[in-house]
Length: 318
Image (tube, rainbow, N blue to C red; front, top):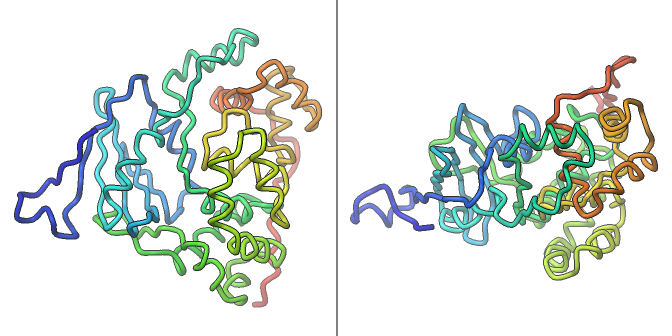
């Protein structure tokens, strides 16, 4: 993977000059199915899907960066802007699933999985390595509707994050660093609709953010939950969601999710199951359970909705 500036030699050092690279994966990559899952709603300030281009705003050790990805004839063309552009381009292979190995999956065990695997050959598990960003986002999604969580993420990141460089299709922002999350005042959490248990959990996690990220990169996969759930307010659901986004964990299962067990049960045995039933159904694919879940969600099979949608609660003063 080579880096080139799209300007001439005299302009290449200018901070506004983008860097470009082409990633040629050894496997088929469906960018939407692989990277698109990171978007938290249609107004996510950190990610925009603009036609065939996926835009990401990220925080790097060198500063903020914007990354644009597009698939062309089996290659992934990447362009990056900002002080962290070179670092951002280095993340492209893992974002596109270079660290993921789907070969151990025995899809033939169930016709739904086999058919979904056949129809989604470019599905890979993305990995961002942005541990604290994934953790903060997952904490915001605890025990609320997706609409509430995505709205809180948008409100907080747009106000306390870092403006993304480059010609983004709309204003974009990289998430704040752990110190930035700690500085968010109480009234801003309230304005964002975040309840005190979630805001306190993020602030406490931010105090140990760097050490947790380092630990997750060094411990065995089986010990990742232990590291994450050692944080007050972080349970197995939040730990699994963090592992999925930041580490591309192929075996993570979000136990405690409001819908997931129902969807897995309906797809595999035609009826609802609880979390214990879901784990039992997924046992034959131990080590690859997250991949099976992703294939189920890509299969198009959905349990019919029988009741009214959960109405979001709003406890803010008007």
